[in-house]
Length: 125
Length: 179
Image (cartoon, rainbow over the protein chains, first blue to last red):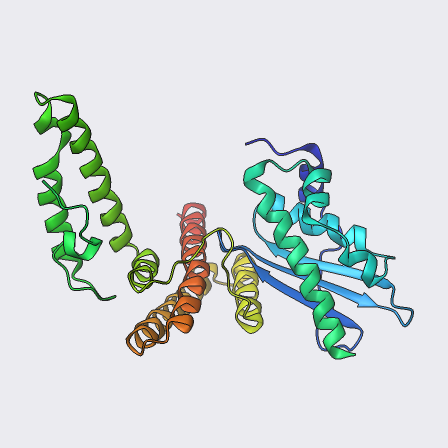
């Protein structure tokens, strides 16, 4: 299977890899696991007083598509409100990265991770 | 002719439980393979040949399922009416996933250890210890009829299956580099 150039770019130069303090009040952490392959993905957001996402970090142990999906998503969510981010669908990610059908579940994983991060942040407020 | 209504344990004459006699499984598998081998039906009509192929397919799938601890556990749940979808069902246990992340990080750091082989050995032992504990927990939950908890254990087994593969690959890679 050939990866698209966009996937390879994110895989070779992942954006926003790292970690934030998961106990901080303004940080939301989403941890998800992939049912089919046992990949794990952690996505974190830091939300400002105005409800806008100031920063996002991720760490993913998985295939190129899973890494690219989470890397792209951290780029997308920065500067957006939580409502705007809730509206992002896995299909948007899959389309942007030109994921083949067998890899669409990687984009689902990223969507689940950001939703979990938002839920975690909201539970702290 | 093989009765397709038998479940996989019945096919191999094994009791329907998680701990199985692997030697008995292999012995019966070889017997069944010999008995239903498609080559034996080479002079039969089309229907017989087709049936022989179906039968060996069924036997192979049964064997594969019982051989893997995760697939065996999953199958035991299925026999109790609990189906799980490999594409969509997964664990949402945050602490568990966080721990998975930590083990992956530890594996990633092995190359920086003073004695990488000793370090990977330690991690591999930790992984197999936790995988065994998960199997024990599954047996307990299944026997207690707590099927939801048993299902959660099977979902978690997938992650340990992956970790075992990765630690094995890493060990081989380190050995290649050192020797």
